Image (cartoon, one colour):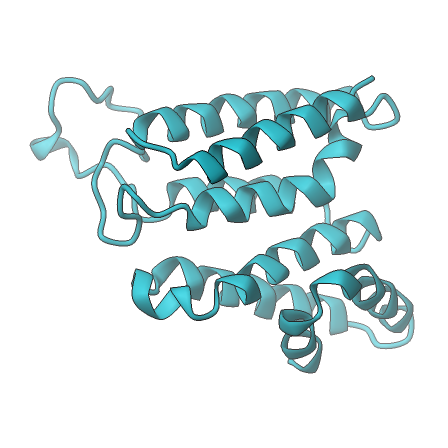
Length: 193
């Protein structure tokens, strides 16, 4: 808990937090698991919070997203957890209703769709976009690099397609968020060279 509390206020030092956790996890079994569990619960609380209450602590949630990426960079969590979290950011609250109320445009295998409206993700809100960008800024260059496994690069490419679909379904993306997405894509392209 102390690490999460400290991480919310020290965005520039998150790699140091991850380094300390990596060092301590060698001596304290289960510490990293508890930390990651708390971190994911806190991020999920941020996705569940209404926009007004969440706005006060947006930077804290972005710091937690960055910390998750730094924990991956220190080999404390697997890449599958990073991708599951990225998909959680996009899918949470956009569950497709049960089959009897499905419109014909939803195939039966679709469980989440960004076109499904939800009060947890209003159309003008960029919180989820910022979470994805922050996590990919920390982990994306490794996924896109030639030193990463081809499997991870493929997973990143598939996720980016889902992310673009999510953005297109938003209708309107504010210019600052659009610029952040373009900067992220440039970063990933540079990492892939």
